[in-house]
Length: 129
Image (cartoon, rainbow, N blue to C red):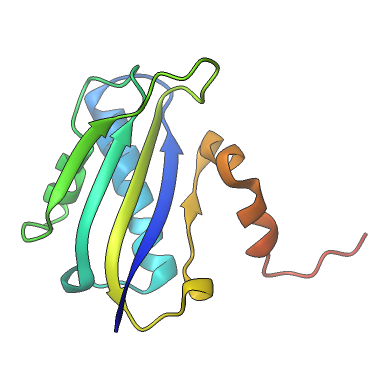
């Protein structure tokens, strides 16, 4: 079993606690579902937020999901001009039998623009153009 990193990001429309916690939960659930994870295999999670998010720690969403044994850390992103606003990013470290190219990184809402290359690579239906 190898330790792998899984990335994800999501945006919120406004800096309010329920927005932060709800979006974080949505992102965590999507990552877990798409990668067939179980909490005991999650080694740790790093959450980052853009400087415009101050209403709540995203890690609280994981605690509310019952992930009491997983080490969690929140940090603020660098304030880069013209960066995507109201963005929550996640890096999960997990123990898994999946190969690196089998890992599914998850970008939701406006955060899809951060890794549009992954949308092409994760298409499940053929494109008829």
